[in-house]
Length: 67
Image 1 (cartoon, one colour):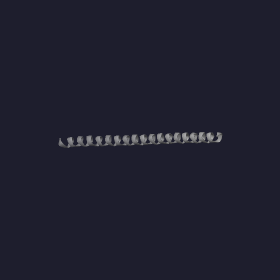
Image 2 (cartoon, rainbow, N blue to C red; image 1 turned 60 degrees about the vertical axis):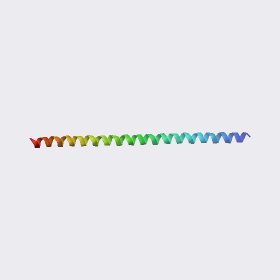
Image 3 (cartoon, rainbow, N blue to C red; image 1 turned 135 degrees about the vertical axis):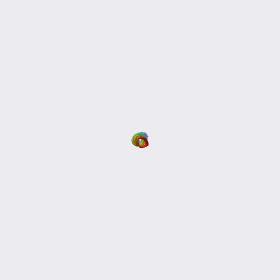
Image 4 (tube, rainbow, N blue to C red; image 1 turned 90 degrees about the horizontal axis):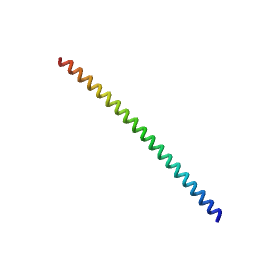
């Protein structure tokens, strides 16, 4: 009886530890995904800024040519 309770207690503890490890892994993956998404958004924003700058410069060149 004592051994059975001890075994169940150990199994429960092992299950709790496994669940805790799984939660930590999920959190780590979510943080990594969020960081990657943020980096991609920043890269896109830099590209948009670059395109706007090129468009502005082209517009200025076109205006100069019309004069």
